[in-house]
Image (cartoon, rainbow, N blue to C red; front, side):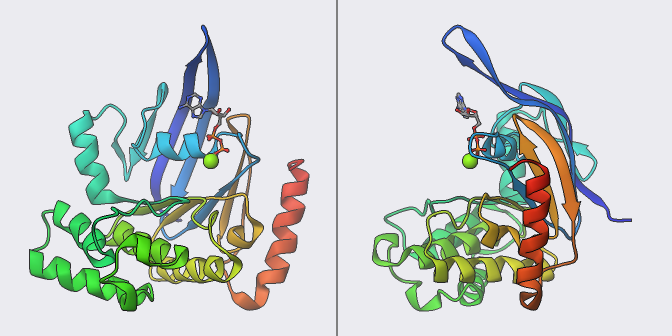
Length: 253
Ligand SMILES: Nc1ncnc2c1ncn2[C@@H]1O[C@H](COP(=O)(O)OP(=O)(O)O)[C@@H](O)[C@H]1O
Ligand SMILES: [Mg+2]
């Protein structure tokens, strides 16, 4: 039996819109398991990003609870949540959101300093190790404006994992990349997952989706389907694509 890492119970999220309420998430119940590369799919506007923010403590659900390794995280004060997030969760978005006046190395290291589990020397070593692992070591002393989109995104992944997060959340992490950089970023995420990194990725890109092993489909703010398959291998990429495609069709994607 796989261990549950994250559990959402009856999570709803509404936004006020000119006098009324826009119900974006409607009683979402889901579990994320240890070891998985989970992929959330669904059409544009289905609520994928809203769900990711609501369960990762980036935003507060309107109602419902979220549990991380059995501990309730909804209801934590903003300060406690910020600390919890810094230690337990990593984030990658469509844009790398690196700090523009810090080098790639500094961007990664600064996040490491936020956690109190390592000395500055240990953080610096780890930052360098991760930049190497993400194949962006050569650009480590450049500013974000002086590197390619792919390099910036790989540095953003290094930053996201420097504090050994229990879950790496990724919202359309390849949405702004060309084909070659997309493949490289996805292969790096897959390699991290093989080493045990739990990943939750939102995407509507099939090329990205095939790297996952568990799939959730969201429509109108509800999870309406799920599917699992073995971990990604490149040889089976085409077969995976066909299987996901058939599943998506059955959801009237
Ligand atoms: N901060 C917000 N305020 C009001 N409406 C929002 C906000 N964020 C998202 N929404 C609405 O929620 C719906 C789902 O958005 P989102 O979660 O971004 O979808 P997806 O990521 O699946 O494309 C959309 O109709 C969007 O307009
Ligand atoms: Mg989105």
